[in-house]
Image (cartoon, rainbow, N blue to C red; front, side, top):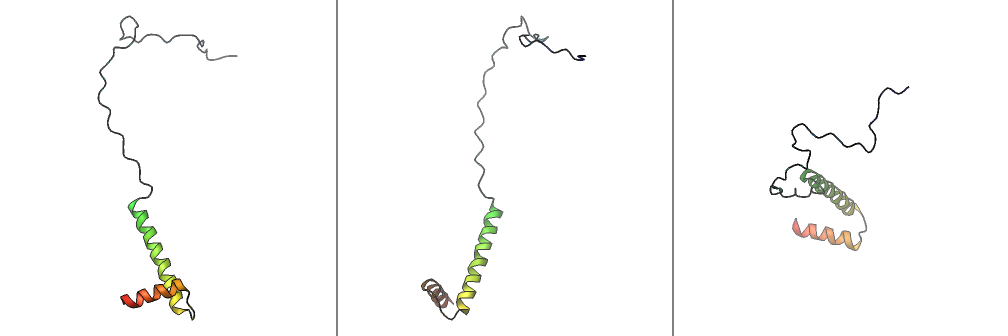
Amino acid sequence: MKLLASKPKDAKPAPSKGSKGGGAAPKRSKAAAPPPAPPKPLLTPDQWLDMLGWGLVILAIVTLLASLSASNSVLTSGWLSVLNNLF
């Protein structure tokens, strides 16, 4: 038993009560479109600061391990000599 009757697929919608003659809606002048929103940044400033902080922590750990090591590579010995000259 079918409770709700469906509209036929080719049925046209009834014209609204406020329209005259059922024709097309009157054309309105188009206002200037607002400028598009700027693209969203990939990372927020807080996320950039978090990444900078983690990078500095990793650099500190590498510096600590290089200073405690008995033998240094070219990269770590160069880094330690830069730090010795600065401090």
